[in-house]
Image 1: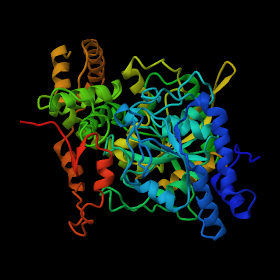
Image 2: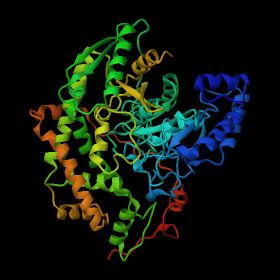
Image 3: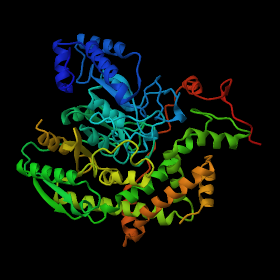
Image 4: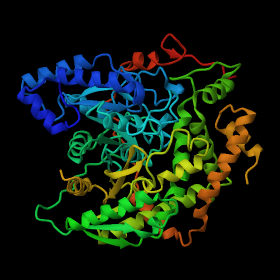
Length: 473
Length: 96
């Protein structure tokens, strides 16, 4: 019996190359774990039928000594990342039976590395939401408390890692969709710098905000996956080569806390206390901690909920029921559109498309979309100034631990407020990592809490360094 | 405060069929969201200089229009996901 609980990618790699167990045995162990627990958690939308065959290929690679760190490593993939020949539904009725005709760049890179894809994970429809309740195929449950949400939109990917139904997973993050579920499930989640990971083959939500990122048990695992998927890609014009590297003898790292943002009302008391303790912990490890003045960052959420729906309304215009996806036939072509889009999109997708249409419409463009872009540059400016003084900006990942299923679903604005700390990194394009930082006791349950570190564009290396220090890796 | 006829207009522009019941829900939700995001209107001094400095960093990126793939290489895969087709074409209802 392989003990999945304590496995990390590099340890697993050592076991596989030493022959302690094979990739097939490992894959079978995960398949049994999924069988045992996923009936309750529902992290997966599909377990791929060829997991063992993929693992056999990995074992051959290992036997030929052609293996890399990810060869034979089981991964779960969010259902908005295309893998050729497999279903990819974005957890939407619109794409329920859509089969990807090509590989996303990240899937291609992970396949080449010999990773084993276990299945596709549940998410909020088209990655819109913070609880995975917007999935057209039912919610995922939080492994720490089955009555609570796992966060979202990459809730399935986070819950799968937290419940040892996979060793690691990929999510996507447009406004916090990797970091917030990682925080709610007590695991590590990285939102890379905008452009560092190719978006080719990721079903688009907000194209100036989206990034694919790893969800893992350790910071070292996140680093391994990030290194495997990052890099310039001719198929994504916004992709860039990033290569931040800390000089070996660098000391005296500084963390800034944006007091303007921490003054926000509605932060859970235990989460705030945990955040302050985390800051003390960094101090005790020799990190400098100081307040930084970032007066415009508090507008991030408002800016995000203008720019994101604007991009959503444009990106989701492609779902016309003609070329792929759901098709509901009406009396004429126009009716085909209305019926297909009305029937295929869930309530949150429709709400955001309509909101985006509003902020882009001629009468309101200047007041909303244009103004949001101006404030976006002011927020970027705040971060540029902050990073002249400090290496990191730190906040809680979310203002509270996971909430109950159904608690916020009827009030979208309340759900959106949970993104208050995560949206700035997407608006500015900087990298950010969520680290498990403790728990809030609730009866006999322990609800995970997380802190978030942000660094300057291309400086994931700093996040890995501080993250490993914080988690004693 | 937005009105129900604006919701109807947005649904029409978005090519989305919504029920009368949903119109009311969307009205309430979108109104509350616009109320929140409207706070950016109060941000002073978003000088054009800042915006144009940001814009100067942005540039369009094009791939060379070269090395085309073989004609028909992806036809089969792409047609396989189309809801209705005829020969090598996607079939749509007549427009005129």
